[in-house]
Each structure stands twice: as C-alpha cells, then as structure tokens.
Image 1 (cartoon, rainbow, N blue to C red):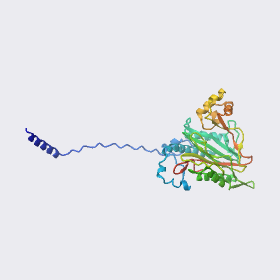
Image 2: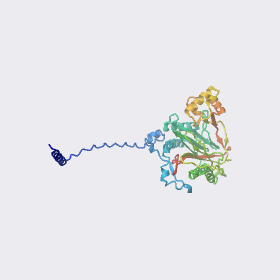
Image 3: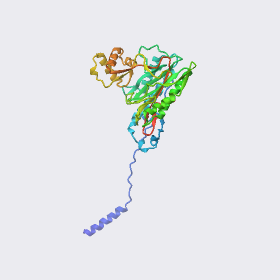
Image 4: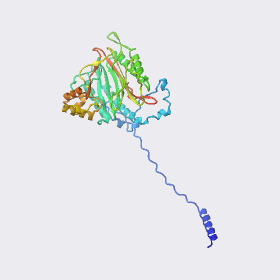
Length: 409
C-alpha cells in the first residue's frame, strides 16, 4: 500500500469515528456531607440549678452574649462601623467565649444565692452552698475551671474581703442587715468578677440604688482610650449626689475612697491596673481586648475603710522561690497551694476542703515570709452601712461587652 493510499484510509477511519454516536460518561455524584444537627440549648433546673454550662450549651458558640454597648466618645465614634476593626484580633474570641461560659455559671449560681439569702440564714452555709453549686455548674477541674476567688459576704459597715473562716459557724443574717456578695467564676483562667448588695428593709434601698447607678455610670463612660481619671470622676459625681434618710436623719452617700475597680488578667483577679471611683485618678487609658471590672462602693460612714479582723482571703506570691522556706510544713502547704490555686485567691475553708486541716501555723509562716499575701476584711466606722455593685466587661475594637450583666442587675 502506497503512502497516498495509507493517507486515504486514515482519513476514512477518522470520519467513521466522528460519525459514531457519542456515549456520555456518567459523572460520579459527590456524596453530600450531612450537616451535623445543632444540639438545642437546654434550660437550667430550678429552684436548684443542676445542669452544667456545657449541658445547657452543647456548642461553644451558643453561650449568651453579654450586654453590648457602643462607644459614645467622639474619638471612638469611628469604631462601630469599621470593617477593619471588626476583623481585628479574632484570636481573642476564644478568651471571650470562656468568659461568657463563666458568666452563665455566675448568673445561675447567684440567682440561687439571691433566693436563699434571707434573715436567719447562716452565712457560712450560704457561702458553701454557692460554692458547691458554682463548682458543679462550671464542672470544676483543677485549674481548668472553677471558683475565681472566695465568696465575699460583707455585712453592714464591712465593705469587702470577708468570707467565713472554718470557725465562723454562728454568723446569721438579720432583718436590719445590708449584705454585699462578691464571688468569681473562671474558665481557663478567664475570670468573671461580679457583685451585688441585698437588704431586707426598704429603708436601705436608696443606698443600693445610688451604688448601682454609679456602677452603671462607670460602665457607660468606660471605653478604649478613656482615662481612668474620667471614669472615677464620673462615678463620684453620681454617687455623691445621692442621700439616704435613716432614723429621721438625712445622710449623704459617699464613695469609699480607697476601694477601686481593676483590670483582670488570665488567672489574676487584679491584672495590674486600678480604676478609681473618685476624681483625681491616673491619666492612664483603657486598652482594647482587655478585661476590666468596674466596681463601686458607697457608704453612710467616713468613706475610708481599714483592716478589721482576722484575714480570710489569701493569694500566693508567684515571684518568691519556695527554696527560701525553712518550715517543712509551710513548704508542703505552698506546694499544695501552687497545684490547686496557683495565682487564684483562696480562703482557709478551701484549704480544709483539700485535706489541709491543720494549716494555720504553716499558713502564718507563708504570710510572714511573703510567699502568701493576706487580705483582711475592710470596714468603715461602726454603725455605718456600705453597698457594692460590680460587673466584668471587655473592651473590643468596635464595642464593649458587659459579660456579667443579667436580668437581676
């Protein structure tokens, strides 16, 4: 066959191939991935809360968002609509989710306490009941989650830092008492610090209202690049415009000058910054992606608190080496404190609970050596009444979120 003939045959074969009916290849269908069904939110049980935050909210993205407040200062007005700022620091969302989980527990635990704190109630029993429920609801596990600091239950002229010691078994609430409760919950070291005051006689309500309004004023004025001095001045202006009438006498309500709000760091209830509640404070400014606690204290007394009675709040100093400790029992106790609480505050009742029943001598030794700091109750003059309200919030690039806010306060 010549070259020309071969060429003709090839062309004929090509034509025949083109004329054959084309068989379409079946495309393999991709199997659609079934979407995971989002588990529904489960309500809490009442009158005794029993469900953990993880049972109530199976998905971490379901934790309730706190109260959102826009920045109202002229120098912050651009933040709300900035797309660039909305995308900024998204890695910080994990810390906020942890704080929101802690806030769920705080709201449920404090609701139980509010319903059970009545005249005749034993303060030690109330504190232990609150703490037992806090541990249950947050599913306490070592330093991963648990109590942020001991329950403060300060009565009348005592403004802060009282919690019952193991021997304080006969302290009962009375009809004429004004009691402030302050406790913390943490998840992965993100602490919710929030406080409120209760009274059982309406004559004290003006004091509570004044302090709550002052706290809300501080929260409203807070924001990125706002000075601590401005916040303190705003709080004092509101607080000290109020008065209360007791036993026929009109008394001006004063700020407790030497108690303050503060920043909150991971596993550190006091993160290094102080937020005053009176004028004349620092020119330092609030920073974005930082947790803060605005807490205000009002009083019918002198407006100054002093150490009053044996300490019940303690905190480890992480900067001192245990090698400097001579007393073996003190060194052993410090090891337990470091393992169990680390930089989180604790009280003597908590030492009893972890099996350190005979801790008093060792604890005193650690306080004397500076390895542990002690915080005694702080009180105004006898016969006066104090009140406290506090919320934890975070300054985000575009807004602030009051994470501990609830329907109660």
